[in-house]
Length: 226
Ligand SMILES: C[S@@+](CC[C@H](N)C(=O)[O-])C[C@H]1O[C@@H](n2cnc3c(N)ncnc32)[C@H](O)[C@@H]1O
Image 1 (cartoon, helix red, strand yellow):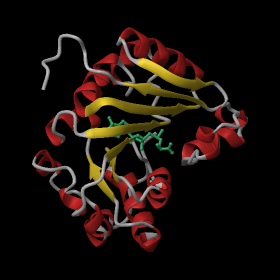
Image 2 (spheres, helix red, strand yellow):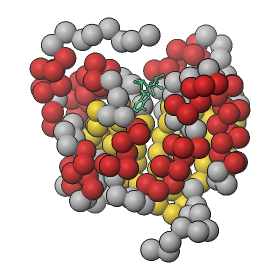
Image 3 (cartoon, protein in one colour):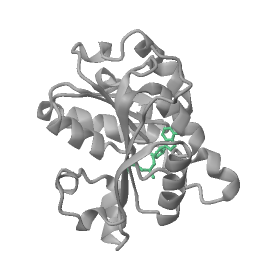
């Protein structure tokens, strides 16, 4: 379902433009430039209304977080939420409005430490599998962008998508460092530090278990040494 068109969307984005990376291709020179401070780059893909991004950036002053959302009418809410909670963080959150398939045009190779994908669209039809953000085609993009030993942190309520993703991780030769099919019943540090997203709150209140995987990316053997 398409989100409802936001009234005065472009004016509202303009009012929060200090948090928006208007020309994401400029990150190719230095992904830390919009922050004015060198810190490890973390990237959230498909941030929706931004509750994870605002939550994470307020407890992780040691990172520069870039959150990406392809629908501008959804990104408006994330940008406004960031502006409203500006004093709660160390100026370490910026947004890109754009599609994940363009990531190689935005980031230098091996410049990102951690990628978060939370509750991405499951694209249930087999013919649409390539659109899933955990399809091997996307994993190859992430492999180029992540630093050696960089991590993908993935959450979903959709058991079918989780099974598919675990197979894709394994087929792509990635190391599944940790996983669970019921994050909210775990008691470890990962579960304690979990930042609940909008979709997570909604699906878990309806009784769905939350699945999660932490996946490490290493260089392919045939990839040129840097
Ligand atoms: C199901 S929502 C989940 C939102 C949020 N992550 C959460 O957990 O509450 C998926 C979001 O990802 C965005 N999205 C889907 N495909 C994308 C892509 N290829 N690039 C960037 N954003 C994408 C959608 O527009 C949508 O806002």
